Length: 155
Length: 306
Image (cartoon, rainbow over all chains, first blue to last red; front, side, top):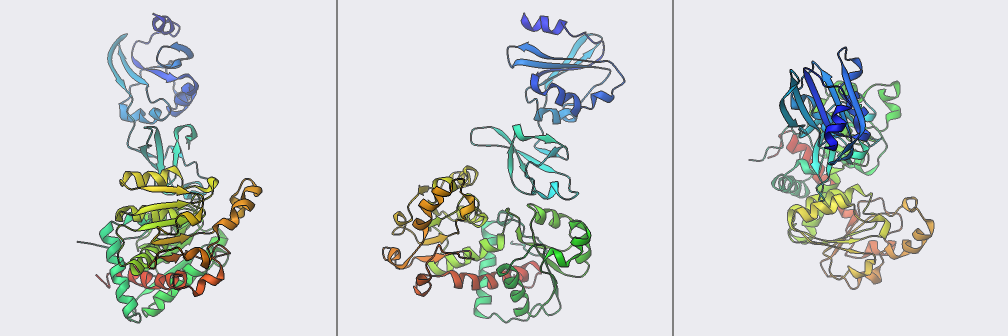
């Protein structure tokens, strides 16, 4: 029931996309990653909402914009459990988890200051790997260092 | 079929077990007959963006023994880098003048990037703290030469196992050959967990020690590395451990007859000079083997040896 109340705090949209279950601390990162500040349509967002799954979560609703899961896969880096909901005429027509690609190209900075990608004009390239505790990490194709998700910074 | 022709070598993991063995076999041929003038029509570029004595001279010696010509620079200060040229532009330009580029560069990952933009193959002669695959190949050559095989070796890796890139590459490579690893280091310079994972993933064993004397009787190879005092957060700790990692002749008395001591060099004081005359000391021969291995690599990559 709690979830229903938090939904009501943000206006419903007629057509568009809802991104739910964003970790609260990353709501603005998702907002920036999708370049929503330059959107000319209605965009609603809430953060620090109660969530049974995440404790505190963020939610973003974007009018008249639709994404394929792979198009917004980059948000999976900061919101791995986010749900993508497609709304048509106020109805949910599709609901799916964001998908993390196996490779991350250009959007993330390497954490190693001595990496060639931080010193020359070289686009970054990472492989998504999992350590022996099953934790997600990014391995730089160039300097071969791995970084944990808390160190992820975007280009 | 093994195809090394026209392939860059950036990281030791670029090569399969069979490809590593192929290079070592070709290197053996050069040990038997070093002055094979098969490179007379070739130009090799040697681009050292940071100074290096051993590696650069070893490569240049390899090219000269093969009868090839060498062009290049020995430090960034004498190159167009000083004028602000990008690495990509330097590589694209020099690739017009040469058949193969040997490169050392202080930036991690610079060799991988160079191999992606270069129309000619690149041999990585060290990219920052990342990889130094020809050192690894000459280490493997020296182990096989002294033990008769690379399989089932008990190797003691001693010293700075945290930052030493040669140690990391050697662990990766020897994991292909069913090695047992004896890891000897001070608490603060232990092998990183990511590197230990390669050992575990290969289903192999390792043991960690803080005392060098514990591993001497079991080792087939003792691979010494330098411990740099500045790596220690606490200088007191360095003072405590520094002498326990100095190898001397009396310690070697308990070692196997066939055991050999390797060191990537330069040595500072971690092997006493008295050991140099001990028949178990192999580090200068190891450096010599580097020339054969580099001759083999250049010949294989240019398609002159198969």
